[in-house]
Length: 309
Image (cartoon, rainbow, N blue to C red):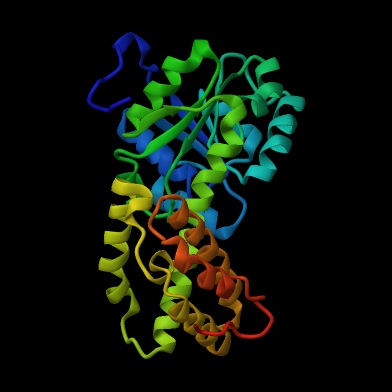
């Protein structure tokens, strides 16, 4: 759904009081975004000193309270806790009578759909799963980044319009995800975003080891172009020694990595094998060059060095 097509005003949520349970990087940013849309943050809970400072910075003047009191003050409650903590939190809030009938209860876990909120649903709450497909810093820049951000939305059919309207009010674009597809959806995002951070951090470390004074400046244009090409063209954007079948170059890489950064060898080999498979399947890697390359990539990460051919 495009943000250019606004929902019917009758489908827009009324101006709501908003509470946040779990002042990590996500919750305060979403509440601040809802505040810009006219809703009113009234309560937030946080345990660590960092979470409390974050709440004070993004939601100045909003009082800190225990989770049960947040629910007592808010019509719309954002449950922004780690995935593994969410089921226990929901059960605890429902069992203690903290959940009120008609209360909108929103979690932001990518892993779970609306079903994890079933204990609250039985208590009369209205369950929504709204997961922003964005990485958060815990700073005001997160609010700006929500503009155009896709949200994975899962909710009962009768709440679908309300869920999508909330996303649009935060500047996002709703993308409907079926309940049973939430784990796959989340795995896809983790594969792309979380692993990307690891790869970039490793690349910068290796460039520093090679003597590059500003690896971020060197990588920025390269990675930006690679990402743009990949999003536009998929596997057709593959370049480099693996896609070309340069077995000798890849073997030299493995030798150098084993010498200078042995902790990166396993990841390099795994990604190179995956790249080779995709390059072969899409006709980029010539079969006659693949055999020597795959021999190199069959090297045990902890074993002998691959031999350049």
